[in-house]
Image 1 (spheres, helix red, strand yellow):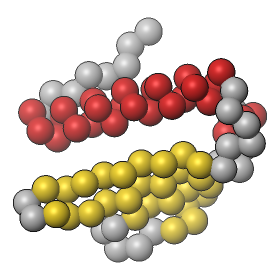
Image 2: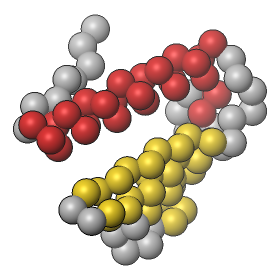
Image 3: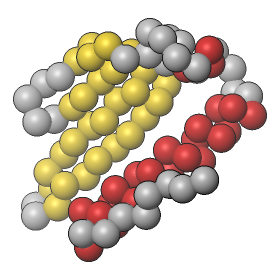
Length: 83
């Protein structure tokens, strides 16, 4: 991954340069926003060449990881992925 955008405390953007073939050229963006006393994290992995079964699997797993992160932030205990 290469960091392509990193404004102070509001966004992290990566571009995939190596790794899984279908990830090459995709961008991963974490937008961070404070609303009152809450922090909102919006996640995107974009610029996919096509929507394949691998794309669907990644979509599912990112959702799992984001849910685990939210649980960890709210309760101190996440749900790590295990095989």
